[in-house]
Length: 456
Image: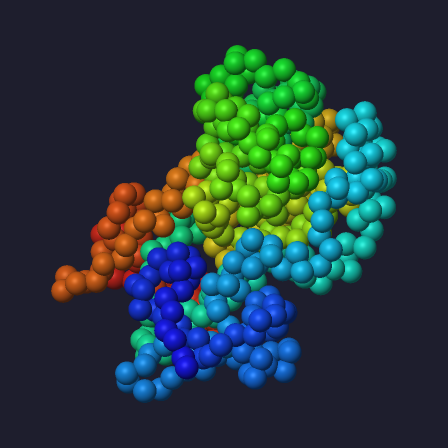
């Protein structure tokens, strides 16, 4: 028996009329979760066992005039959530590194280890990262590609040339970019004014992720100095000891303090130390957004990745995924002092009109060699802003926009299409169509009924 389901994840992503997000589930799903291929994408979910050879699944288009839904052998929302929330990683051995005896010992002495010692230990632990096939390095866009494939199928099923939706970014921006600075040590704290000067020289504002306890003093004057210059303060864990997500009891003991520091710093955002995370627990965090989830985590102690370059909701929190390699990993794990990987990643993100989210540590990026690379990266981001229409913004502003967009509606009536909701004055209507089997976006200029330029 087939049932018709409105895909919430599809409609949240595209903000299109709900009828285009109608997908029919062809029958009962298997009890077991597993990997399978859908188009060119690898997904992890339950599926119709009688429709699969364990490798590839296909959608079916109903041709009757009464049924214009795409018929799927899996639940689209379940497949998307399993990637975004990294549930696929828990199918393997993905226990928190700090739970092991070696992990506990490492984090006990980590603050005392110089970078040159830490990097040798980390290189040894991560030496097999190039052998990992999933998620896909250097950027994984499985969620974005899957939802794009579903939109193409929906367009065909509804027999329309173009599907209207609310464009991803304000004022027709082609993509978005945020700069963030994780402040891990007293040296890093003292270097924050220098980083603000460097950022300002490229007219790019950043968020400073501040550790509230134990690592260094955080006087009100330091927090105020960041806000007064038009930058942003976010909370970076509690004490950066690597144990926040070790177990739920520890997490729940620390969360009230973390939330209190958020209010004290007037912070909208949170980021966990070492990008450790468990998105199933985020309901206890009292922040507008989190930015602890890597897109692909091959070079992080906790493997996995959310497989999307777009923000998404984890309950009430907007997740701003970390979509580029960290400076520490680039310099000290890969021994790469160029912007080549960053440029490769930004191009892939731009192809999906996603969020470029960068982490630069003031602790590691103030010496002449690292500073030159950092400034080259800022120059590249400024070029993307000035020449290719990328919106460079503070993370809190990106989260605010994504929250506003999630509540906007695309209304169709006798007068045509219009957007309703807070922030609509910055929103534009776009159209999705099929060009040789590839999803192509056509942006409609504000206050115009004519079609605009093509973004594919």
